[in-house]
Length: 235
Image (cartoon, rainbow, N blue to C red):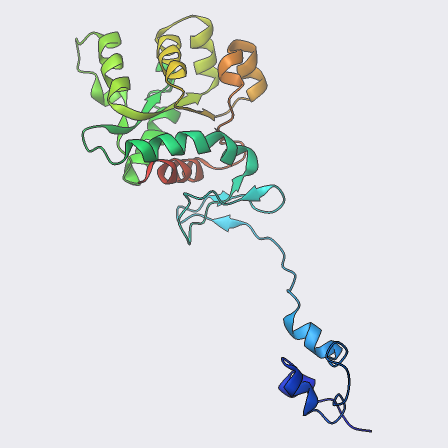
């Protein structure tokens, strides 16, 4: 019995099938063996977890994808919720274009976090080349705080709000953080970053801010969050 040559030569055309001693003479639709199908069938794969150069991991798998602004070779994977939330902000960043006279982000945070989580996020963003308006370095001693905050907001392309237990307490007390938050919400260019708390706790304090999806250090590490912000504001 003649042996099919598909495992060696493949039947990628009718001519190839016609030259095979086992398959010649079959119809153009029936002249391919199971080996031809196997050679062209897509191979299945198992999603893996991506890792950032800083050592933090980013989720992948079901419900995860890549936004159009994430560069090729990026180690970060986004959820569909994150992509939907960040897409309008990315569009605004692209419309604004590169503006050397403006900061990439305005970092809104609670006073109690200035030497902790807020400083860590600031440092990680600056290490990635993101320019950050940060009250700890941008408000000179003796300067009117609210006036300097207004200037910082006006000179920043995107606002990020570090939502921590301390931030929630400050918002409840209608402190400076609440005033910054009101200005940021009015601009529609706001990325909440949930840290050591939950969206449910945020919604209980600020339903408007809690209705906006953002990033969460409970799902990604702080280095990964900083990396995603970097991709968001890079033009």
